[in-house]
Length: 329
Image 1 (cartoon, helix red, strand yellow):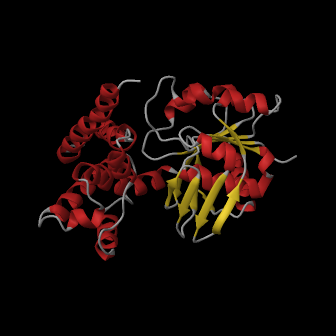
Image 2 (cartoon, rainbow, N blue to C red; image 1 turned 45 degrees about the horizontal axis):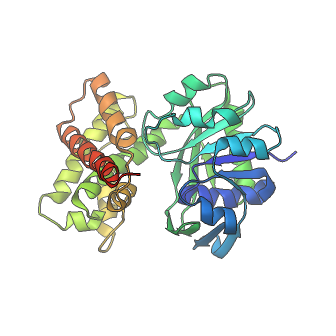
């Protein structure tokens, strides 16, 4: 029997995965929980313009507004996989509480989210379920509600949480389903090395670009000291990673990432926090930066630049809340 899949938080990344998993298990078995794009997706499905998969691709999963609605539409049949692609932003109720109605004893939960140290709220809520921590590389954005532009990269790194979990077969099975739909997956014994690899970039560029209202190359061209600031922030992140047992996050990795940014032409890449800041949306400040600082404190690592950046970015994030409150309901 084909697996039943629930994608929670179906923005640009989630929309691409609705297409991939629909190819693997049929559209009838893929349920997509949508919010801001619900009206468009429920009436027209998703339209994907991808340099990898093709142009004007139509994807028509079972579009729902809530997890409860997905459970009702599934006629009591359990979900084999819940894929969380919602941003890792604190909420009430929490994200684990929101997906709980769809979690059965055999459900595998896959977290396709940014940041570090994001897994514990799920493992404490669902201690018996297979929990997969995933790192995605997929340049995608919604150009309009339900319409997604996707570049040429699609790769999902997958590993159990914790690394010592007895559910290694769940990671392999999930990767197999993804590959059968045309996706690309790599399974790791310890996924955290991939989380730190991505965090080296995300925790540096995301908040700095959001604060400066600049893409990465624009920021590097903004002053003589800009590139040195990025290097110093990356060095602090690398120190936290090394104190956490990941010596692979080192100066060579920093130099490689800086050289990649320097090779890009203006204006450069728009990180997700910059896109959110320009739209007045809340950002993944704590998942990406705050959790890094928490780990740094636990390990006794000094991070003065990252601490200052965190405080400033939290202030910016709070300003979006005030702006919405001033507008009223």
